[in-house]
Image (cartoon, rainbow, N blue to C red; front, top):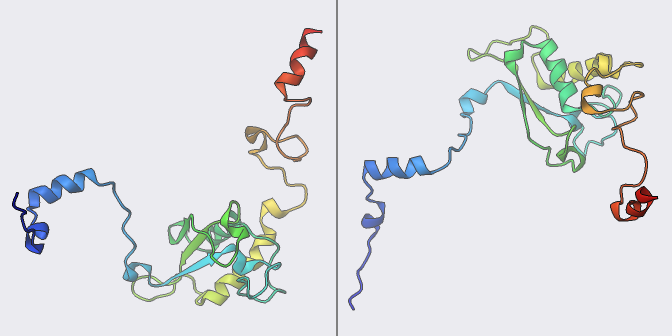
Length: 185
């Protein structure tokens, strides 16, 4: 039996029709954003503004100006109040230095556009990333969810207890084998 030799040209020489057929079978992959598109944006992770973190753990501002355990949602809400909503984008990314920030509610990267495509600032007072971090950190303690007596309007929908004590858990044992004899009595 004679073996056939395969050359590089044979493997790489694929017709356009074959490429289209193969492309239709492949799942759609999100293309990375262009560097020019990302120019003028600043990323914020929750450890950047966390008073309880050290600089080695990722805090980027002085601890006196930082706030207690900011969540990605709080950072995004404050950024949307400072900047127009179309300039603020949230992404489901974790901060590599912080093990705790890999899960919700701390997980998330907020991207804010400080400069437009022409290089002009989008906010007259906030033109550097440090000023952005300080402004966001100053406003987080003032949002409604951080005020005493705040009641989450979504708590009844999520099955929370009346006092905000967590999810409602039925009383009694959930072990069916143990309870099987008790129900018959």
